[in-house]
Structure formats: structure tokens, C-alpha cells
Image (cartoon, rainbow, N blue to C red; front, side, top):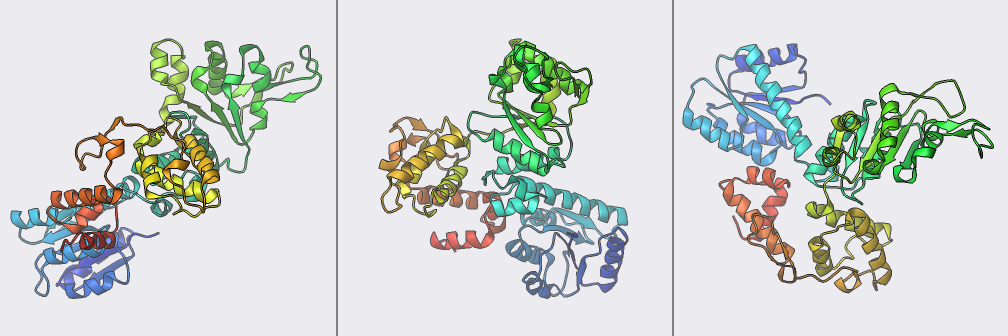
Length: 456
């Protein structure tokens, strides 16, 4: 998709000059507007990645136009242009959301440099501030590969983009995180996003292997190579040929097995037991553990050289208790999978889910909801259907909400949301565009909520 650029200036000669520079640099989707009063209607028809705005124009001041653009299209990066450097104007422009400003006359390299920095900021913004799965589709080049990872969490969406980038190569990937966070799902997604997506995905529980059988299980063996070898056997490396080999629970391997695994990673070759011909390890290795490998290296329970071999592409999945919005999203997803409507979860039951620590993470949430779905009448799940402990321990509220409170005395979600939105709105000087950007919601959604709060 090409970069769409808007240029607004009341001097036609300047519009022609800037447009020509941009086209020479390969930016062909350029729209020029001489009358700034026409921009608002134009924004209703199409969106722009970057807008260059002259500050001094007779029909409409460039700063007022900036505010219009940020209200209607907050994702557009705006670069202000002026012939007179005015500090108050610059400060106001930045407060209104402008990314940069340029002084006339503008040199071509200055123009392109500012544009490229604005586009890079836009790319980073898209990557780091996504809050919905639909937005993830716009960022991921292959969103279908990651469709099984249900999330709206900012860190998780960024993690998915990292995973997609790593999937393009064959370097080993290490996935870390607590039990039940979805490490195998992430490994499967990497396999689907890679050039090996047509090959097999083979998962191995490394804890089930012992040192004496490792080579036979991993490399395979020839008939008669040892007592009990009544036929040829293809090992895990052969089964995963052309695809992805997922090594689960790698953090608890014995040092002996770690050494054998390291040799495979380093040499990329192996010899099946009882054979003399070396075979190529044509697999992509993805390893996972819930252990702190760096700590185990310090304790001399994990080989330093193997750790360094794995650490460069490390994806750490945060626990579910740190992803409160994902709890709601996953709950709706699991209930739909159980044949119930997504809104069948009562508000008090949802509050119980959000307030729980989820030591078993996503796996535990799925089990609790599937059991609750069996017990619920008329599809409405209430707190009594949730097999969760009743706790009165203190939980930490969001920083903008206030002090910690007891679980039994938590405020309704709507009130927590109201106070958080209003606090952010005040913190950004009542600037709706910036407030919507900080909250990660659409501008129209913010307008609707502020109206409900009787805020003009």
C-alpha cells in the first residue's frame, strides 16, 4: 500500500515544488490543496499518512487546520511549514499533535528526512499502540497465521509483530512465559508464518526424554542397531523435516541432553543410530520453557553456550494477570466456543474473572469457563458458576484509579472506566485527539463517552 501524502498551502508554486520533490523520491500518491477550507470534506473521503500544513494562510489558519485534522484523523502525522519561526506557534503546534515543523525555503533533503521520520513514527505507533484484533490485521503481514493467539494487549500485539519478523528466517526461537500462557500456540503461529508453513509441526515434550534414549528418539535408528530395534524408526528430526520442531520444557533438560541438543543446533547435522550416513537437520527449532534460563545458567543447571544459542530471538509472553483486557476478550472467545453468546457472562462474574490472579493463565481460564458453561442456566454465567476461590486480599488498581481496594469492594467497571478517561482527558489539557490516542480508542468513541459523562 502506497504512502498517501497531503500538502496544504495557499501558494500554488510551493505546492508544485513540494509535490515534484516527493514524486521524484517515489511518493506518487500526493494530494495538493490550495484552499484549506476544503480539507475537512476531503478527509471524509480519504485518509492520509502524512500532511504538510502551511501555518499562515488567509482562509484558515494552519494551526486551526491542524486541530481539525487531528480531530477527524488522529492517525495522520502532521508537519507544519512556516516562513517565520515563531516559538509560541511551534509550541502550540506540538501541543495540538504536530510531529515536526519546517522553515521556508525548504531544501529537498530536509523535506524527505522529515517525511521519513514521520513515517517511521507512524509505523512504530501502529506497531506499539494497537488495541484491537482488527488493528493487528493491519500491522501483521500474515494475520491469519496468528489468528489463534487471541489478544488486544499492547505488549502482546507488539510481540506478535516480533514473532512474525523472526519467522522469516530459520534462526532458533526461544519462547518463555509461565505455564498456560500459550507458548505452543505461539510456536505454531511462527511455523505458519514462516516459509516452512507447508511442512509438519512436531511438538516434543523434552521432559519425557532420557539421556539413553535421546539419540534414538531424536535421530531415529536402523533395524537391529540395538536390542529391541525390530524395524527402522524415523526420529523427531526426520518427522519434522521441512517444517518446525517445537521443543517444550527445554529448561528442565539434563546437562547431558543439553550438550547433545547443542551439537545439533551448531552443526545442523545428525546420524541416526546404527547408520553411517549423516543427514541434514532440515527443521526450524522453536524452544519453550517456563523457567528463568538466565538464573539456571547462574546456578549451573543450564549450559551457557546453549543459552546464548537460543537467547537472541527470545519472545516472552506476559502472564494473563497482567493483561486484564485479554481476560474479557478470551472469556468471550471461549464462551462462543462453548456454544454460548459472548454477552452471556454477567457483570459480577466478569469482575470475578478480572480480579482473579490466574496462576494457570489462559489454560486455567478456558477450563473455568467451560466448566461454568456446563453449570449455567439459560446461558447466563453468574459468580456461583465460577470455580474460583473467594478472596479478600488486596489487589492493585490501575494508577489512574487510585488506591488498592478489596476484591469484594471493587467499583463497577463502568465507574473505573469513567474516572480513568476523565483523568487522562484532564492530563492532556482537554485535547480530545491526544486523549483518544493515549487511551487507544477511536475519537468518536471518546466523544460518545464524554457526552455520557456530561462533558462538553
